[in-house]
Length: 153
Image (cartoon, rainbow, N blue to C red; front, side, top):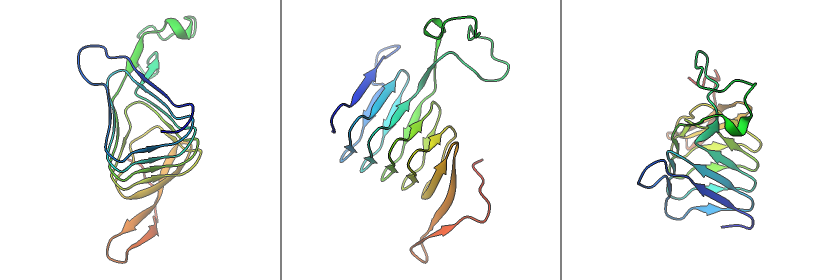
């Protein structure tokens, strides 16, 4: 684990809310917050200045009115949370943010400065804000092939 890392676990009930697998490398200034559950698989590489959280002050989904009004101080809004899962053999680049409810599939790479707000499939390279897959590993040719259509659904 690198310098200045911050791991926060706020279990709402009994049980484990943060699981970090085997052979995980965590570099400087990584901040992980878990309220419901954050799972990091085996053989994961986390570069520096990464933020991973399964929670937020308030709920901002369309149609939800759970005390998240801009008239309420953010610190007083109810905490909402959705599990985050990072698969095995994933590489997360420098300064990436991973938001609640995201699943990152095994073998994927998330490029530097990306914001992962939706789940990412296995064995892809995803970049941007919001992060979208741009390449997929081709097991027949053993190469990363560009995706013809960028689709994150």
